[in-house]
Image (cartoon, rainbow, N blue to C red; front, side, top):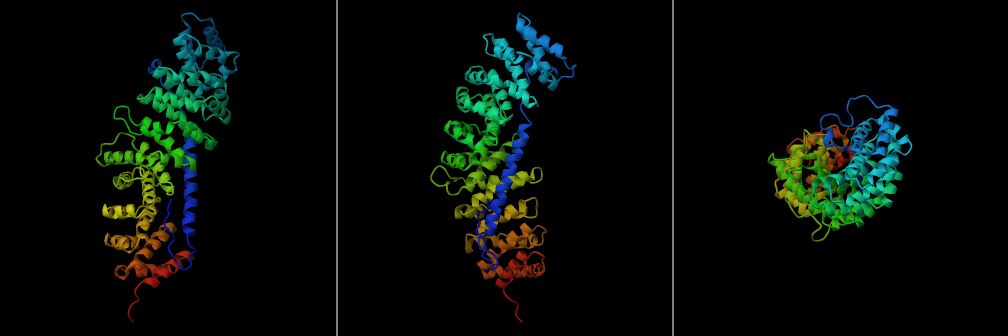
Length: 499
């Protein structure tokens, strides 16, 4: 959020704009989290099994089995014999149809049979039962998820097993069930899903597929409406060090595990309690270090496919943690790598046209980094990034407003900072943004301009020579009273023409 103090305009109470921006940003963050949650709830993970890669997977085009056929499949599981595994596979394919899922769970003892074989001694049947439950967990029908509740104790138990493939299957099944409804989440929490996830990650250390599956399940929990009750359990489980350790993308495996870890850290950073713990555990320098590494890859055109999916949650996490300026103090918890500035600007430039929202998110993190920090504001100037930011000022969709907030943070640090901003060519750019249609952009431009012209008579003279005065005089006829008052106050600071 923008922590730049309000400029002392005559007709404006102190800090009103700041409070309004904080409120607006909190509302935007809430909407962003809700949008991510809504998308995730309807986009469960469905694993492709070896016998399905021929195109005859759960959603094949064969005729939908009738109720009688489903009954026969279940009866075949009860009878047993050599064909039981084949019967299981036929049942799993049938369960790929939502209509069959409803038929199956309503059959007497159907779930008891599957759960019984899941907990049995036959390894092959256990795996096939797990695959059937996984298919059911992907169902669009909430009642199907509820029917799977009887299997969750066994799924959690198998998270401590040695088979990475079967553990991954159980994890995604649990992850699909988590967002179904509050009752399922409460049951899973009571059964110890969070400590089970922590132990599972520790047992399979180095297996990125298991890490991704475990953290996917955790992210499903952290998107729940009752997340404030879940976050303390996560923080107490020792999961956060595993999340930070998993942030590095792997050249061979890809960015899947790192992306899910980053999203979990983002969800935790949205909480006051979570952000404080993350800062104390060094999440800020850790996430910043990954962003610096990724920024270098993007700058050299060596980035992995879909790398923006990792950058997005990392930026939000860093931005959220920086917004808690009161806790970002002390050695080992604050950001000290100046290369982060360059990385944020690389993202803003590199994704400006392909992902403008991501470019804006980068600038939001930059804004939070420079708020109330003379060191980082000085680094912006010394790194020669002001011309880069000025080039972004013509772009809308919130990009120019974030640039102006960052430059306002720098200008607020005093006369020396304002003079360097003017020398970098900010005044001509402000003359252009003052003519834009967006009220927010014009307001921010006026506030930055006020800081510049009030800092030095030479800057005020330069603004007049750039024919900026007529722009302000035209603004005196604007329909917005606040803009008229700001423009009038700045005109009072400019040198008056000799009569």
